[in-house]
Length: 64
Image 1: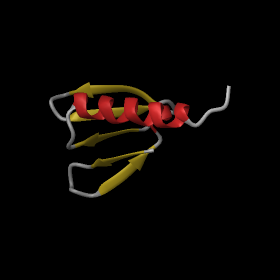
Image 2: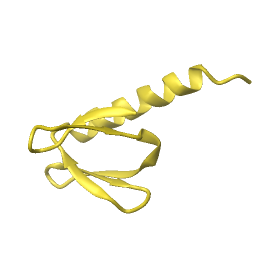
Image 3: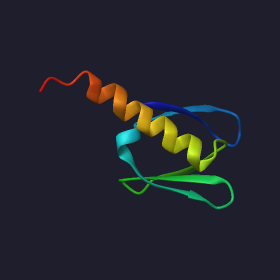
């Protein structure tokens, strides 16, 4: 899960594995795999970095 900020300033926690794509429209719009979408204050690169870091943390605990 990654923490982001909606345009209205409220915090939202998103399952990073459910992100389908991220667009700069110029605000950052996130579309989830089930079709929901919302805008956040963070830029695209920041959202990607948080999602990558989340994936690294999750996979670090997996047993081979």
